[in-house]
Image 1 (cartoon, rainbow over the protein chains, first blue to last red):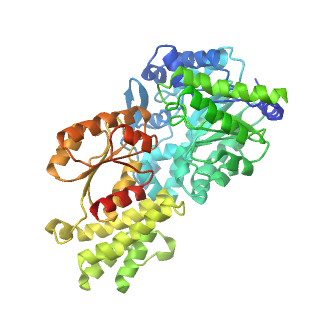
Image 2: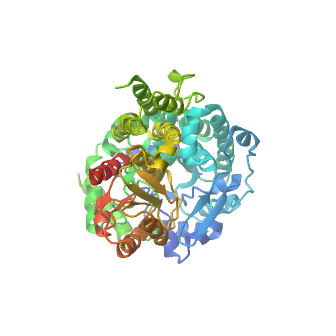
Image 3: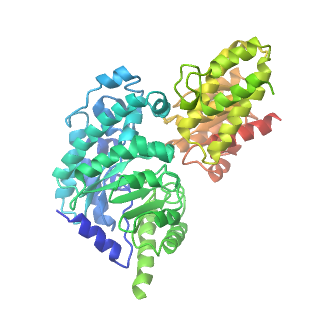
Length: 338
Length: 222
């Protein structure tokens, strides 16, 4: 069991920078499997993560960011695709009565056990770095059950019903995270992309309050919450910080330097290389220049952790991923010479 | 401007669809877009006037506030909902042709993609700016766009994609559309899309937000 408080402090105090990109598709592709097989089999999932850990020097290991898993457990219909992430079809609940009657599933529902298996195998695979599991956040999950457009309006039309739905979502996520902690994960990335579409006040009311329940119940020296909100353009950073998560993960919509200025210095602040516009579409030379520039701009912030803004999409060239890490190595080499 | 139109503009801008709606709290119990549109018609204000001097103006303000990060997706959706309530009252006048629209937009999320919130926002804002919108939904093939185009001569097409794996479908869809219905104007948008990609696939316009689409279409119509 890694003491994550000490681990984080050491990484922040260290002169050099670390990286924790959110990437799993490169691992799936390296082992010659399909996305569908990885999201349906804990073993395949764990093999992909293990391969990534062997090839790339990320400071921590992340798992597949599958934002359909928890919704499926509640009863949503899912469409699987061979080479892309699954999709949710339709909506599960559409009014207060249906929310009232919605049952919170247990961890045997859907593919939950396969994901727990993937995380357990990853922890047991001898990867000597923190394993950060991935879960969907309460508001984003509620949006998947209720329909994202509809929940945005329902927050204003029937807030009590939506809060009841958020309670149920949080109860489930808490139970899942508790199990992830029990099997040895060092933390969990809580993905709340939908919350980034809200104002700061609404993000706090309909997301942060619920994420804080996870933090208060689970975060300690051995287990951290990393709050991911790639929809935040800088307008709801305050709401994110309200959760008191140990680390915050930002997407490419925000100004990383301005965000670092307003975030606590003892929290890891991660981000925010564009996974599509930079990592997929640029060539290695351009990627190294972009990341080199980002590292120089953020050099005065020792708590900055280089990451991608969101999960890397499928078919990012291997040389592009290599360039990401080479850029970091070159920056660190200059730091160490000083 | 007529007081009823001023009130209608305000309730659409603030997102009050009808009297029953509890939002926004400061207008609780007051007439919403539905009631005020009915009252405006009863007062003899023309449907075209209602559209141009209340609804379109309101949605223009909403679009600009959204582009400036002064309001966010929920407020925009509530305004669009209010506008939709008003448009429902005006529907017979659209059907009869008494209200002239600026043109027709055919919109959909491309084949393989099921995400629709961005597409829905664009559809609402474009309708609110006086265009007829044919929303083909999600997972739309080139054939569906082409069929709708052949049924609506001169329509503009808007393609949306949220995923990098589906945005690659846009290129072929654009090519098929322009082969089958030459001269069609095609707009593209969605999180992974950008202006460079738009040019690469031969589309005519890329917009980063709904207001950008409205402005492009209004320039076309002028």
